[in-house]
Each structure stands twice: as C-alpha cells, then as structure tokens.
Length: 222
Image (cartoon, rainbow, N blue to C red; front, side):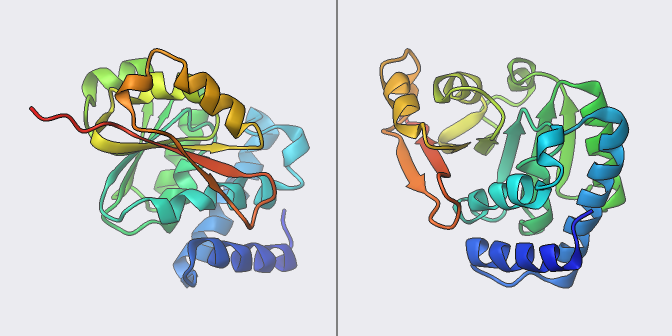
C-alpha cells in the first residue's frame, strides 16, 4: 500500500493538475479506491504487476489531466475502463452533477468497478456497463458530451468507437504518450476524419511525455 508520504505527494500533484484543493471526502475516496484495487488485484489481476508499486503515479495521477477539460454537469463515457482509469478517478473528483459511465467488457473488472462504486457511494454520478463500445452505442447514440479513454488502441480506433456516442460538438479525449504526432497523422488519413474537427494535442507539462488528444465532433445543421 502507498505510504502516507506517497499519498501526500500524490494529493499535492493532483491539486496542481486540477487547479483546486482536494476536499477531505475526495482524499478518502481516492485512498479507499486504491486500497480496494490492490486488495482485489491479488486475486483478479486488475492491473499489471509492474505498476502495483507505482499505482499512484501510473494510474491516479495519469488520469487527472482530463478533469480540467470536462465541463461540469455533462455526461461522460469512459470506454475500455478496465479497473477504472480514468473513469473512476474522474467520478471521484468531478462535480456532483457530472455523470460518468464506465464501459467495460471484462466480467471480473465490471464486478470490481460495481463494488468500488457502491463502496465509495458514487451511485449518483457513476454507472458501469458490461459491454463493448460497439454495443453501448446502440443504446446511447448521441448521448454524451465527452468520450474518454486511456486503454483503447489508436486514435483512429477511438474515433471510430466514439463518434456515434457523441453529441454534435462533443469531444473525444484520449490520454496518450509521446507517439501523439504519429497517431494524429494516421487519423487524418483515415475514414473517420470527416466526423471531427482538426485534432488538438494538449501537452501535460506536469507529467513527462503525457499528452491528451482532443477530437471535437463536427456540428451539422439539421
């Protein structure tokens, strides 16, 4: 488990990234979430063994840069949510009227996510769906202001999976590393380019090598 010193450093970095102080309940929920995750991980292998020792850096802090890009009170889908990154971090730190839906096909991860949501009392702002993105869009077509992802493959694949879920003018936000330029170039030559405006690469100054690629769905007059 992370030490109190590690948590203190994590909270300080999170506050810098999201540009506001964390409240006591948010700190408690972050700690409770990671405690649950590491406990379940012993049996269910929810995160890779190489990231257990650096779970705060590799998973909690890395999820936070999306939060300032999401307007409060909006509906958000996290596709390929895995063990809850970035979606559960966003649910813990977002404003109460923001709705975060976690879309994950793995049964063991869905069971963990639902347990975490119940344990942290996040039912009013977070739901989990056991299905693939291709299935989710059938029920939630044009339903979201934002689609976020960290685990889905290339930007082109994420655009393909998310465009049907987004409202006109909605944004797809992809957490990426140093290969952002290559992924953007591939996207610009692909078949889903016409659904989105020009991509924006946002460098995350406080996390070395981290970027967010923002794809805004075009608005068409009806």
